[in-house]
Length: 148
Image (tube, one colour):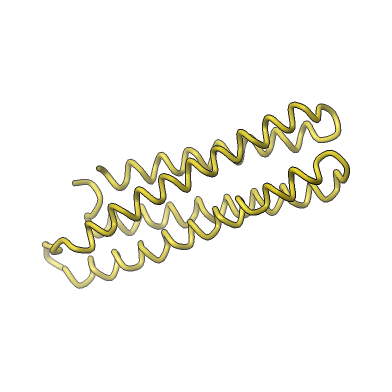
């Protein structure tokens, strides 16, 4: 398995969730049935991203057990550790967004202002997750880990 490829799949799922939530924002108050479908679609994309992160964590466990070769093994080990920390940050942000879906489902019908605020919080959490994921890819690339 290729760590960086899986990270790119997770990033695509995050982008899909963000664009779907933007569609929800546009449809609030106009078409509640479409909003419901879009909310479920966005939630599925977040779950897909979380599943990809779990695949990455599994692969990182294998990488942690392998010996680091190269000219600067201490630097590569530090970058590997930093990438694991960034992966945890990405997972935390995705879980924050995931937790907000229940509030969104309850508020999109009756309280549009609350739904807008929840959508803003969700898209911010998704943006943070994407940034942390990009940091993981950068650190793994610099350490020459994840392409094997």
